[in-house]
Amino acid sequence: EAMVRRLGAQAVQVRKPEQLADLDGLIIPGGESTTMGLVAERWGLVEPLRAWVRSGKPTWGTCAGMIMLADRATGQ
Image (cartoon, rainbow, N blue to C red):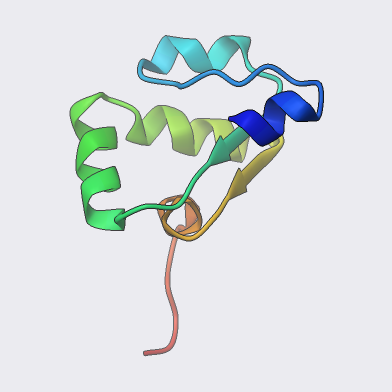
């Protein structure tokens, strides 16, 4: 959050699907991907996040955030 603010943007922690509507861009940080997926599912964020990505709005996922954004995985 601090780095986003240093760049002159406002950082908002999204915890509800309706919060996505007010955002200009989205960063999904790293973390433990299984836990992040379970929390996103519990909070009803999985499908709204997928819709956000499909809409073409600026989205960046790092580590587990990138895993959550993937629609498929290849290789081993």
